[in-house]
Length: 289
Image 1 (tube, rainbow, N blue to C red):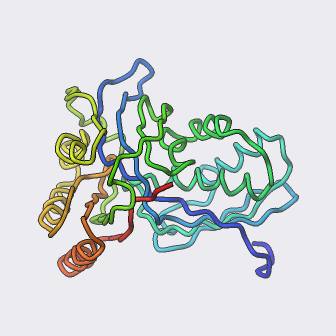
Image 2 (cartoon, one colour; image 1 turned 180 degrees about the vertical axis):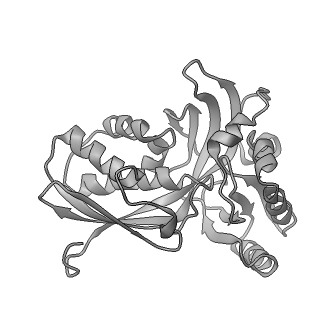
């Protein structure tokens, strides 16, 4: 790491949550055609960086979930940094510290958010001008969720994640949101393999009421088959006072609940902690522009 007296630049890798996730079909290229409304928490992992001139990308990882990750060449942070280096043709390097607060393999886009935050960080650190569509192209090469994580704002996401449209829903942004993970990692590939191939219809995200009433996560059922404890999380969240919606995010196992007030969210977080002190929780709000 550089001299500790040198102040780093910092980016937050905001946790991604699928308010709804409709799986429509399997595409010819093997990916699934998705329709999802992505929102982002105000909190997440923290990525810090110091510039260097030797071309090296040095990554260190700490934080509560840091031990679950390897800091080698396959890490998404390193891959993002190398991709931007190659695209820019720069010989500049960076020392990067990832502080991992989000559980790994948990359906809230942690790795994708880390990669996106790295792209944002290094563009600032190296003082480069890069058009949003260029950054989005680099991001998609890193993973389907990475382009949406670059902006980290409420978006309708279709295709395999490459088709993005800013999609504000009245009353959604700023809502208190509690994330809960029961401490189990779930394989995205395994969950998709368990999907029943039924197309249950398009996603209507025109209003918060419709999202809550008619939206769904088509991966909940196969995820429950892999990790039945997800059902316990959902039942507990749905039973809390002043909850608007309780649903699983992504391919699991993290679930979320939206609340009418900060007080209701805090009370729910206390209830979860008292009943299951080994479950991970994060009290946050939906990030707005």
